[in-house]
Image (cartoon, rainbow, N blue to C red; front, side, top):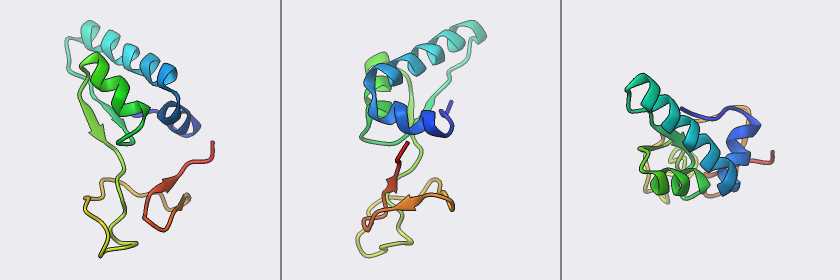
Length: 95
């Protein structure tokens, strides 16, 4: 599960909101007898909330190697053409 739009940014910065998303994942995982993962920004509340609840975390966006290939140590998993990135290649979320 990946929160969409402004919710993605809000839950990356707010541990209580990220925990709420993780609780929804746990609820649906139990009801559907499936292992649902959280896709989110690494090193943020997304990853913390998933780890606390024992939910699998999939890093959704890491440093963009195409922007600064000599400085990147990560593999791109997604890129947003309509959003901005800082000089290190990290997504800037304003909402």
